[in-house]
Image (cartoon, rainbow, N blue to C red; front, side):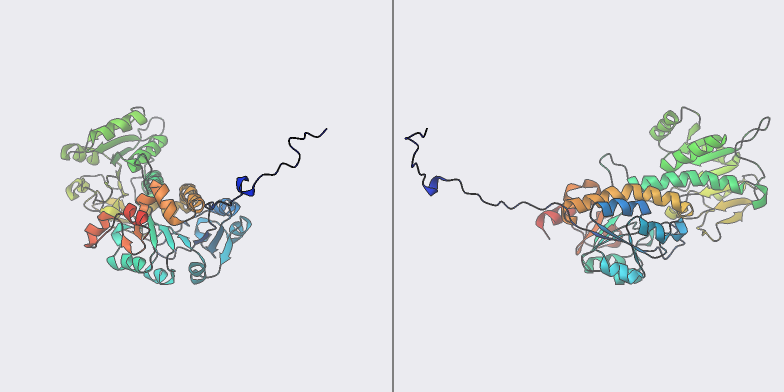
Length: 406
């Protein structure tokens, strides 16, 4: 039965709701990520392991790797291809076709010539080798440069630096154990000793990340470990972490001299970011060490902790002075290229995914504090005050630049 009151009822069009399409901001961006071969400084690492390509391509990005880039870390081109990466035959081809470059070492000036306008570069910066000319070339190309040394998490830690320092600490003890053997000119002893024979004595200068992991590794060998530092809270924390299995002392001249004189191994691990390492061990202290003892100066790239130290190379890693073997190779993690590459990849992949999800490098820098603290050049501007002071160059605040849309 029809209801008369409703029959023929008509509504004016002006009262009808009208559909309207709203502009919705598109999230996400397709990235073309390039991983070039590391062509200098005996660098064996590669910025991304093959599994990264699988994750990034699944998220809709393209990954390009220069042929042979992973060879020294024992990652083949075939592994990258199977994971979804595309192989670029030359560095020039790779740089020309990508909007984001991920490296271990900063690009050489020749590589900078291959970079494209407004590319994003994520790599180490290496303050000791940085020049105003290098920074200016990046700025002329309007590059957004993000440095491993500057990327800082919310808790104040430097995730990539920490990873590499953990590896350096472990490798320092492995290296010392090898050079203590008689075949390399060492004292002919093992770190941990055996039943009835006391262990070797390892003295570690510095209670930071390198020192902590050197101590953990030396304890694992069974060595007697002494750690010295000028910062008492750091020593207290290390004792707590290691369940008081290490001997600690304040690094004054008296304690350092006594510890070094009785050491089979001295590990130089004392450092402050952005500053030269303090010179804790003088030449006369080295002279007092027993013949065949070993010094591994891990922080040689920041000047070193030992007066007799000088930089060595992966090809010629040691020299002998006052009958003491010195190992002073910068960039120790390169010798553990596969482990280091996995560690680096674990930290980098979430950042790359976030850049893609943000939709632009501007938005990623704005929303991600870690990436923003990592930026040292942005478009045509230097954004790190420390670099500006070092080179006498002007700088601009990164947050103001992003907010202004420059």
